[in-house]
Amino acid sequence: MTPATLSGGPQGQPGSIAEAVRDASWLAHRYDPGHDAVHFVPVPRAEHRRATFLTDEYLPAGLAPLVVRRADAIAAAPTAAPIHFLFHSAFCCSTLLARALDHPGWAMGLKEPVILNDIIGWRRRGGKGPDMAEVLDDVLTLLARPFEPGEAVFVKPSTAVNALAPALLTLRGDACAVLLYAPLRTYLGSIARKGLDGRLWVRTLLTGMLDDGLVNLGFGPRDYLGLTDLQVAAVGWLAHQQLFARLVAQFGPARVRTLDSATLMADPSAALASLAALTQRAIDPVTLAAMAHGPAFTTHSKSGAAFDSRDRAVELQRGDTLHADEIEKVAIWAEAVAATNAIALTAPARLVA
Image (tube, rainbow, N blue to C red; front, side):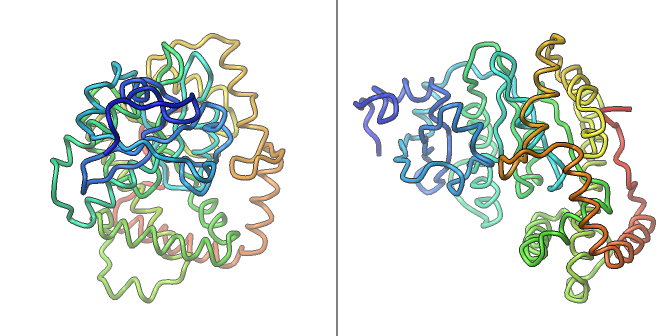
């Protein structure tokens, strides 16, 4: 276990555990339930912005973790900043929105921090040890450490974490959430364009959602074996629509709103202004304009290449044309499943009317 006093420079080991925990540049990266310890790694703000996600794949190689007992980390933690959530059903511009919200002095965005995946993985394995709610509460405290005073923290968890959304919103009674999704046909087109990787991904996603008890569409276990890849994608999409409707009903539109990618991209300023109002974060016109017209909306969230709304429309059209027959047939099937299960294809409590 890491000693209480350390040595080194700003990119090496900090002077003490307390120094590291107070510094947002030391990201709470992993949780080890076996040792009830948190792994911190040095990730300055510029690296946060550069990384597509806060995962080892996108962070610099060879980062030496600072391993701290959870109790010691919480004892040293500063007062938590306001924290809000961007839950999503994937391929819906959620990474783009998290990037846009990362504006110095106003807010910082955390894109899929792995430490939350560690918690859901621990739960799925039926892990024993410390109380899970207590650990999750402490993890949120360690994530709510912004780079600058006065900033809120917007956490965009991975889709694997969506089963924890009710717990996260319960633990943070003053937190709000935006639930992002792509329209059904747009989502199916995104999966189809990604080829084998996309088709395997939706099956992995559905497996996790089944493990988490999030799928209730009237199918039996054997039924899933007979579904095509895009039907599996549609099942995951519909299950997310069910989840989002439940979250709105449970926590109310004063805390939880929904946003589809088409609406976000059609008017970024309106979406950002509505999000600021939902979270009660004052925003001046200059800051709003900088966020709505900044690099988040003019570069590709994954590659960093120049990529605006027109490029996105061309990409969508190209994919839809290539896979049009399959997309349309599965969409019609999914709409029938939705009707049978009373699932609205447009989520309630829209962020932008």
